[in-house]
Length: 319
Image (cartoon, rainbow, N blue to C red; front, side, top):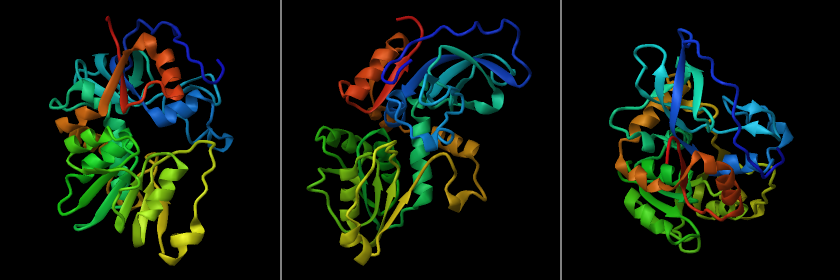
């Protein structure tokens, strides 16, 4: 399969034998497209140096392709350990109707979280890790540049911090309505308030990262959650970056933030992210949905810009 093309395959039939004692058979209810990463994978734009680091936990095939890729899956356990049978679970499994997986790789979804919202768990986990990388302080002025799904999740979590002024910054004026649902301010890049103590950048564009640096107060920090794939980014480091003693650092969900590694685990981080999804405001981030059999066309449309939006949810089962 060449870059830019997708196909739904019928895998070898899942064994009719009962799952092993530490294994579950899961029927997928919903999955979601991670627009940024999956778009780069779909286009074959993973840098060679990152082939191993960017492998998804249940990926099949090798970069640049063909690969089975994805990591936002919510399903129901149909067979396995008694305590999991019938439970709704989140996993890092790709888009697939049924699958077998070890019980340890499945995280039960809290009863208070609707399964259709739980597809956001991986994205909320990314946002949570970023806030562990750069914890806000009471009184901070904070901007989130890029109102995609990741940026909106960061803003949603920041909205809960006391005494913090948060603005969501994006070039699309319709994101103001989502910012209002999340309880944060909104501004275009040109109108965004500066003198920020902290900026979280999620737009995956060089212009967004440059604007993030411009919004900082002296000795402020930009935390970049974007992944640019094979695209180079140019920054004006000869301007305020040096004289203002600014900090630019990355945040990536593949590893726990250094400040919490001694007392947190990745499993606990995911459980916490799922618990945070009890907030119904997150429903505003799911703006599109399609059926599983439409996924190849959906991915092509997303990459081409024909399906703008935030989280794109995939539905399984009969129409």
